[in-house]
Image (cartoon, rainbow, N blue to C red; front, side, top):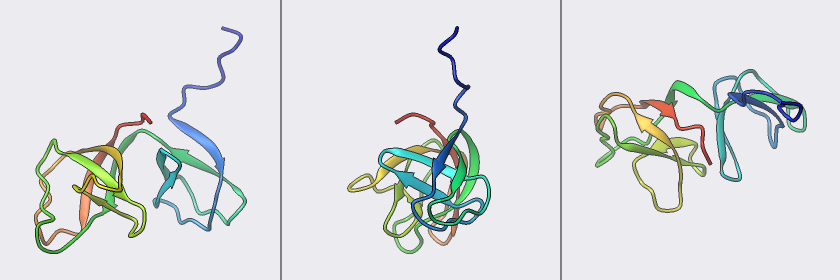
Length: 111
């Protein structure tokens, strides 16, 4: 195919802010993980598919069971089970208890 560009597992974007390697980044409805540190306005590879440990909402009523949909709270930069005002990013691979601070998420790679 002469119009094929790349598989799309990662994409190069311009960082809207300084971002650390491994941090979640939401641009519009595209969510991914920064492959390396990048300064604002510089290019960064954003990984759109795969399994990642992400910071998660903590406190009362934040438990999530394996297989549940996971959303990105872009204000607090955490994974959450709360759909309202958040963006679907994937599914949880293992239970996250209330006191947990990370969620193991398989990114859905779709927008």
